[in-house]
Image 1 (cartoon, rainbow, N blue to C red):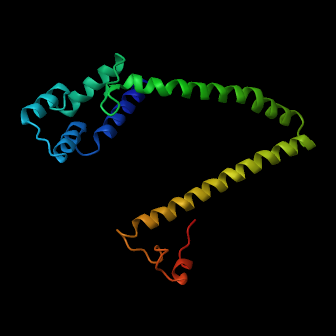
Image 2: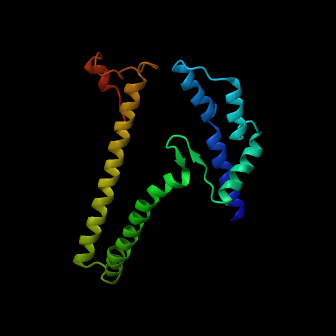
Length: 182
């Protein structure tokens, strides 16, 4: 279990580091785009202060040590500690999880026990029908969302990669009939 946590922490750190640059370089680029000049000394000071001048393995060790001590870091976007940002959302998440568990114990388990003890009864068939109709409607909704996403992707990418029939404005009806989406 410890090795799994270490592996997950390494994977999370790698994912955080994957985008090109870092927050400081993005922030400095935004300041320079607004026409303000940023001194190289200030950039170097901030890189040193936030540990961005260190190699990745040292940044990882500092990050993991902070996590183990409960220091999740500071959110530059919200200008407050990350623990506070997460804490604001954590309460509602826990409330939602609590009511989900209550629903499972109060509604779902009794229905499952009833269906198991009264197999092939009319009520069992009715409950099974409700279950299957919900599963079918959720798979239908999933299919519809995939189709919508596919069409949106085609429409947004037509300027980059011309796809025959992707344009709905200027393409003849015969072209749009040739596109088959799942």
